[in-house]
Structures are given as structure tokens and as C-alpha cells.
Length: 151
Image (tube, rainbow, N blue to C red):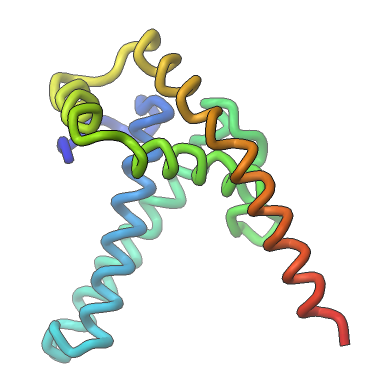
């Protein structure tokens, strides 16, 4: 993926998505590799410190989402809520369902200094195709949680 050299406050919606995605992947990968013993114990403290920094960067990006139209992406306790997850999952579905050629084109746009508003509007329209399935899945998950909470 292209390296995006921008301040978070200047990132557009797709750049925020990729930043959030990469931060999450980094944290998951490091925790996974430490747990499986692929990273020496002596390095864990330094990696744990890096994870704290990366999670802060991820939260900073999430806090920018209202600027791009995501209403209140965090709940009262500071955890991502349904508004966030709907937004994230539609971009995630778009990202992971694109062809190699489409990915190459997006990566080239990101590498060349960013994505224009016109290109971003096209990508936003493409993400909307995933919304009905995502909303249905969120409802199934809520129903399952409700069933688990009943005695």
C-alpha cells in the first residue's frame, strides 16, 4: 500500500479508512506474533509501547470521522459504536472485494498525492452496494448478543 504522508486532519475519508485499517493490522500482527513466540520476549516491552502509540493514532483517525460524515463514531465509553462499524465495514467490504486492477489504480492514486473529490465520490457510491448486507449482519449480531444476555 502507498505510504500516505499527511496530517490526519487533512486526510479524506478513504485515507482515514486505510490509516485505521493499517493501525489495526499492525496491533493485531504484533500481538499475534508475540503470543506465538515469533518475537523474542526481550522485545515485547518496546513493541507494547509501539502498540500504544499506534492505537492512539488509530483513535485520532476515528475522531476525525465526523468531519467526513460519520455521526458520533464512539460511544460514551470511547469505544467504536454502530455508526463506526457500519462505516468501517462498508469501506472494508469495498477494499477487500476489489479486483487487483482496481487495487492497483487506487494505490497509484494514493501514491500520487491523493484522491480527488470526484474519485472519492465514485468510491463512496461503490461502498453503498455493501450497506444492506452489513446492516443485516449488524442486526444479527445484536440479536445474538441479546440472546446471550438472557438468563
